[in-house]
Length: 397
Image (cartoon, one colour):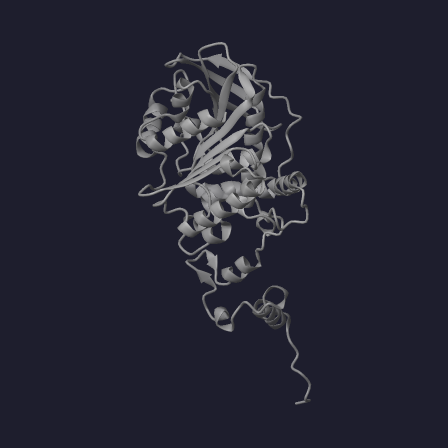
């Protein structure tokens, strides 16, 4: 023995360095414990045993009230730019829409149209456009469909399908979905009967743009990442473009355009409001939470797959989920969640609502923010919930 320190090979050195870093925590805070390193490398096969240390490092430094910009408008510009940076998809505003319209059969008090348009320079999408009878211009709703692990229909979840684009198969599937989650209603048709122009389009993977299989979602997202793009980022850019298209129609009052959605559609609705000035108000049903409170063992998000539709890599280093939604302040917003919704923890919803409330109150616009948790309600958008949203839209648009 020479008395010298034993030589460390690369594997030993890396493991030791990682352990030291973990034990000291961020900036030497010492938040991690030695016992956390013993076993338990994975929890449930998909959550790292050190997930709490990673959550402790998330401080959301770009949130309003924490970020350096003290002027709210300057903060909004900065925060929106940070979100757009993490979409990994270029701004598509310069791409012509080149819409093509085809008339469908009349509904009860409204006209049905099929519209095909370019949402990005790579994607041309067919959607449903409902227009009330009359001269207009009308208030309008960009209606955003859910995920639901059901891909054979997208826009048809919210707008009743019609011939020649349906041979009865989609209608049967759509009606079953509406019966399960929406009290048997087609929300888009209900809005059109109430005097709103409605636009609803398929997201990539659903309806005319799919169907993707549940177990293929992760591969689709990974392939888009490898191509320098993003599944969630593409969805965000397309929704913003759809909002601009709807607001630009002659038959629409551009000052009175709302985004409305349920489940993943709710996420899309408030995200679109945050990223687009074409949205005057937004209602999101059953999708709002704090990120840390969502990332807990057993939560649905940890399964992956569907999570990729709402994942912007690296954004959590800067903004929490409600921080992103707050970019839409002080415009009218309605967040409605069910007390029995198993997809989001009560703590997560409460944390998010508190953060949202603080932002709107800071703008002296607390009366423009409505947050509700309905008792004995799960992950659904029932007729009474729909009626509350319809009445709210009437009051703010």
